[in-house]
Image (cartoon, rainbow, N blue to C red; front, side, top):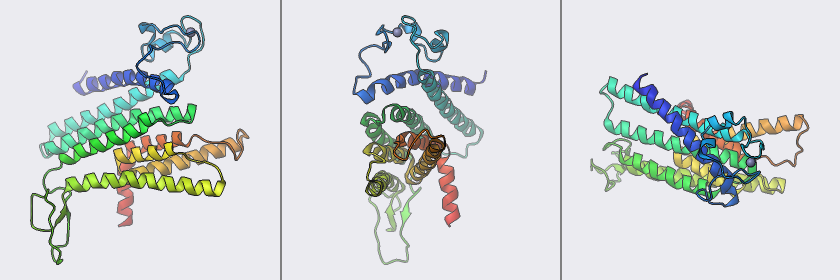
Length: 314
Ligand SMILES: [Zn+2]
């Protein structure tokens, strides 16, 4: 077994543990209950769950999806969430291992680039945990708790700031045309030739603040227009905060991509429901679930697709 596959296995097992904790959050947060106390109980008979019946994936399989005490069925949601978080962590561990391999193979990469990318991977680890949780919570309870969305916005923004501080001097600086009359230099700039409007670090932090506000404002406007046209609520403030959270972690372009995927998948799902006569035009879809799925998709492929689209426009 190689070092990197051992690292990936550790990522998967850690993901299973976090998935188990996420199940507790999903069951309790929408009802405003503590995620720490009391201990987990069977929702049917109220018996405390023994530690050996609480092992991610395994216990559900060994118990054949039934409570040991009252034989009530245990929802497949529990192992599914554990597996999803496990696979997400595995993916992140694989990205990190690949980065280390490239770094050891070539000495061209700057250590600061490695630090930045590792922080980006940790951010995507946390984002995946939050999005999987929000996806299931909105589907089951039509709620997107602030404990996930607002905390997520703060964590995503702080991690972006940490990444920004690892930018080497001069990288990503926004310069003004030197032939221009205007002479100004950001106090944070190392090269003070009078034409650095913002250093890369400042640009990244301010850019992210704009991205968070822009994403929130965009979805808020869309939901206001929807409400005015259809005379009913299509999206709530929870969805607005969710999109702002995706922007805080990934950036504005990526959050637009997540919104696009969310709208398309929700529309396809709605059409399928209508065609099978399972829904009417009044049925309310858990839009946050589709948006969270779009966020996961954007975390995986978003940066590549945003770059591709930006190149297309040039
Ligand atoms: Zn029971």
